[in-house]
Amino acid sequence: MKAFVLALVMNITLYSVAQAQTTAALNGQDGVIVKYELSKISDNDKKDKYIIVATAVNTNDYDLYYAVPMTKGADGKYKLNSYDNKSFCEVRSKNAIGILGFLGESAKLTGEETSINTRGNAVLFRVRKGQTIRADVRFSVKPDQLPIVSNSFRMRLKKMEEFDLVINNSMVNGRWKASCGDVEMSLIFVKNEQGQSMITQYVNGRQQVWFMISENYFEKPGDKNATLTYNKSANIFTYTNFDGVICIWSKK
Image 1 (cartoon, helix red, strand yellow):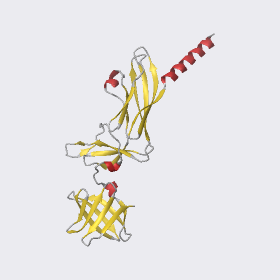
Image 2 (cartoon, rainbow, N blue to C red; image 1 turned 90 degrees about the vertical axis):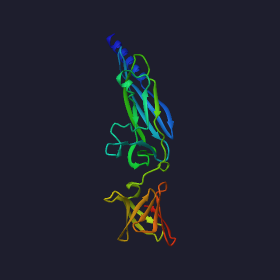
Image 3 (cartoon, rainbow, N blue to C red; image 1 turned 180 degrees about the vertical axis):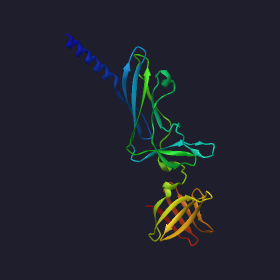
Image 4 (tube, one colour; image 1 turned 30 degrees about the vertical axis):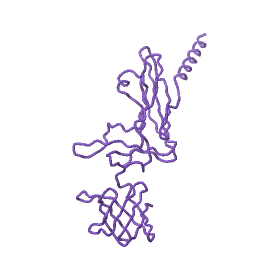
C-alpha cells in the first residue's frame, strides 16, 4: 500500500512539473524571432516561482545591428555605462509580483558590442546571421496564477549601411587594393598629437598622409590636387587628382 501511495505521489509530482513547462513563440521583428521556455521552480501558499529562458534568432542571411546611445560624461566624452540597458528586446511576465516585478525585471536579449560608432553618439551592437541569443529571468506570481509572458522590442535592427556611421579604425585599418595599376597598400586611421584625424598610407615603401577635412573627405597637407572621398555604405575610397585620374580603393 505504501509503495502504491509513493508511486502515485511521484506520478502527480512529475505531471505537475511537466504541466509547468511551456515553450512558445512570442513575436518577431526585422527577421528576428523571439521564443521562450517557462518552467515552474517552486510553489507555496504565498507565491509561485518561475524562470523564463528567452531566445532570439536572426533568421536573415545577413548580420543585423542596433544603436545604443552613449552618455556624455563630466569630461565631455561620450561612452557606454555599465548600468545602461543594452538589450534590443526584453521578455517578462506582466503579472510578476514582489520587488523584482515592480522593478520590471526581464530577460534582456543583448547583441555583441562592436567598436563602430554613429554620428549620433551611439554604439552599434551586432546580431550575426543565424545567431541565437539567450537570456533568462526568475520571478514570482500569485499562487495558482499563470505567468502572462510578453516581449517588447526596444529598437529596430538594421543592416550596417542603414546607419550614419563615424569612420573608425575597423573600417579603415588593413590592406587595400587600388583599381589603377593593381596597386596594393596599407591604410591606418589615427589621430595626431593635435587630435586631428588622418589616414596614414603605406605604398611601395613610401608613406603619405591624408587629413580628414570632413567625415567623408580627405586631403594631403599642402596639396589640394589630390583628394580622397569615402563611401561608408560601400566601404570604398575614391581617389581623384588634378589630371582627372579616378581610382577606387577597395579593402582586401
